[in-house]
Image 1: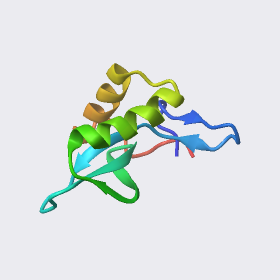
Image 2: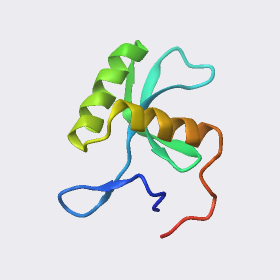
Image 3: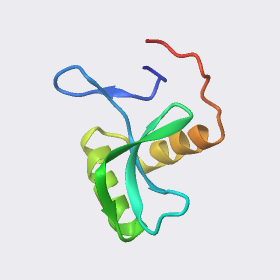
Image 4: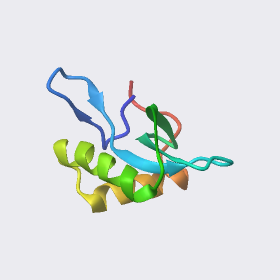
Amino acid sequence: MEYGYEKKDHRGNLVYPMYPVQEEKADHVIAAYIVGNGYVPVSPVTYDSEEECRKACDVHNNFHKWTKVEVEAIFFKSITGQYPEETKE
């Protein structure tokens, strides 16, 4: 799905920015792709701290040339529901 902020990898697949997420009732942090009005966990890997997770997310985001400001804005729009439910496919 396309939301306007995704990019394409070297194979032409859509790539989404990553952000640390503290899930409810969990004592760990996960890295998640920001997709529309939500997120998708990247892998079963968990991190003990947000700082540790943020470093992993930063590597991914920097590689795909998203700035920290862009990622923060995308995440804010995602959690506040500012991305429309209907998207381009």
